[in-house]
Length: 415
Image 1 (tube, helix red, strand yellow):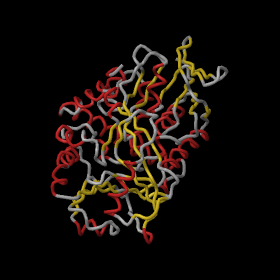
Image 2 (image 1 turned 30 degrees about the vertical axis):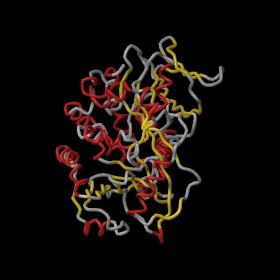
Image 3 (image 1 turned 60 degrees about the horizontal axis):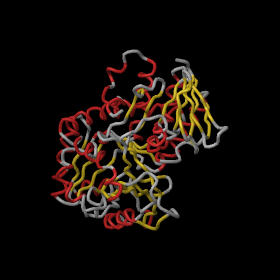
Image 4 (image 1 turned 90 degrees about the vertical axis):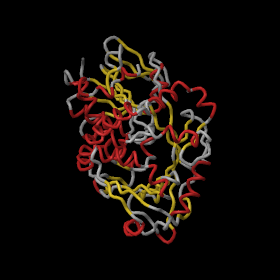
């Protein structure tokens, strides 16, 4: 095929894909209705962590179901009507918690994260944003012995995949993070991992690097795609707005589902929504790295804009109205553990995480749609896995025989 490529979606995944394909000698136009990094990539906890190999649907999920289905926890909320309309996805999601599928997913995600981390470091250096990086890992906090015991599967999985960790007792935790209250029975320090102080600024810096190296960026609200001769056309909201290229990469995250319906592809995708808010710390109190309160159901991350409190999962339609009561609950739990000050944002930020039934992204060419490539479905870990996704996509697109190396992410498992 020709060398012209459109990459739809300027979040962290789309930007990394566009930059990698450009460096492979293709002519790339990056397309989004907003400036790069303004949607899901803006609001994450900023973690680039080896521990992200652990999917939400793991074998321990079955024992947690009765509590989660009560729909009153901080960690997980759902809209009953949405869940009822998506029982097929929910059933496949639960079936993917079987040990055999879980091990396949953990192995695949581990490889993707290992591939991504060194590429992130290269990109941060190339765009002059290395100052935003911390190499101090992050910490999981446990409020009781029972909570600590419930994390046994995670710890075994980390050990199996050689994720470096250190158990912290209360005095050791206090030495690392003295602003935390003496609430926690034990903690697990995830080492060999990174975090950044502004995910949006990192995406924007990568996008500017793409432009400097010769890539083109175009603002366009894509409403449909179609095969056009030997290539693909993206239709905008106005009849006169369209773009065409030899190949098209869809990396629109949660918005990929509706767009792909215009070409006959129905993705089994659901939306794990989440909220964040920035806070001050009382008398300047802070944490030096992200901390995850497993019982409180939130992550607290030190950011350039203040302390970012990120919530757990809300299962609902992609564009359903915000319900920030989950943030209120998480804030109340966070105030038990940390001297949190006032809110710094006028309203809670809402993001959407696109999740496929097996918690693995979809990377590759869409079956029966030559020239249509997919890089989507990264659920909570797009920030940790975007550069690796870009590497795999480029290999699949440009290197014969690469399919055999990347079967875990093939779109054909659901299309």
